[in-house]
Image (spheres, rainbow, N blue to C red):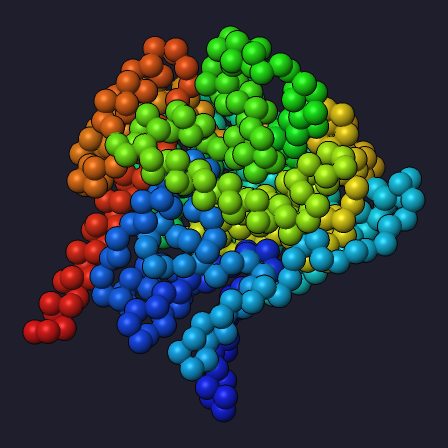
Length: 519
């Protein structure tokens, strides 16, 4: 993982580079005859001495998919250097050049019967390289397959007990994933540390979380990631995490939905509206509507989006911004899908499309959301987070695997689960995937919901004229009554309101600095 700038004095050339998978950030902007670059947008704003305007289309994209896709940021004319890309600046001209793509290599493979062993060897090698350190190390352990396999591999390379860290949530069955994490910690004989997050804990952590989030993502796991990072920092300086396992080996529901695409496309056009109307919740309707899209990019957006564009239009005062944001996302997805599958999204079989979807998530969702969440929250407490699944050699090997080794029937992570049977209890390997998310749906029906609505109504974000206030009130009311689960949408609005207030306050400090300089 890296982000660096290299100035070549002899040739008058500046090189900006970001690591292959986008583990570390690098932002830049052109302002007059100046190029400014930094690892944080807050630093760029200090260099500019002002806060730029927000990009309305990027903002709508943020609400559609929880992140703004590279190279855009939420701020107009401030850009992210895409993962696996260098920027070359010479004679006043800036040129972006990609230097790596996950599917570019074509590794050779042993027979299927030996693939699980080959995967274990590569994962062990990657973990070993990430254990090189002169400071104490540990691991985040959710009790899910990805993090459990990292801990199992660490135990094979470390003589002393590994420190593991987990968080759960008060009031959830088994306190979230804590019971599963405890089981793995017991089997692996780790020195285990855990924290149960309560509703007051969650609310108290919001200001620190927002302050660390320069280019916002709307992932609900931000706060528990900050809290587990704070827990880990009391014992270690470096942790290994399981990010990337889902994108490499097919862990998300949308990959399994893609397997049913050819069957669902056989549903007659006249029947499709009826099926959609009969769906009990907007999330089921969203999944069905995605099947009726005519392109792989449209289906992918439908399954990956926080909410469908049709529902999001109800929130925006200018609904056409949502349409433009969705069109921009589909265009970007089409471009990335075509790089993996030049023959077109459908291809001769669903295998090409599925591998292209995995590649797409590795180049969008992973660097622009998941890695942002981990990097910003860990660095906020001076903790270094390392991601062994994203060793580029392991990524190249896994990216070229047949799709049937990733998603088979209704099972995701097929090969990883086969490999895990040698190291983990079957109950851990076979249990359904559980997201690392707080019980927002329940919390937002009570005091937290009232607090969130007060924060939204009192926020300076209202001056932007972005949202339909009636829609927000209606969603809160319907959510409290249990008519539907609007928690992700309400969380997004609340988090952005808090972030925007922080931006406004930050802008005032910049103005104050400028006035002080003039004096």
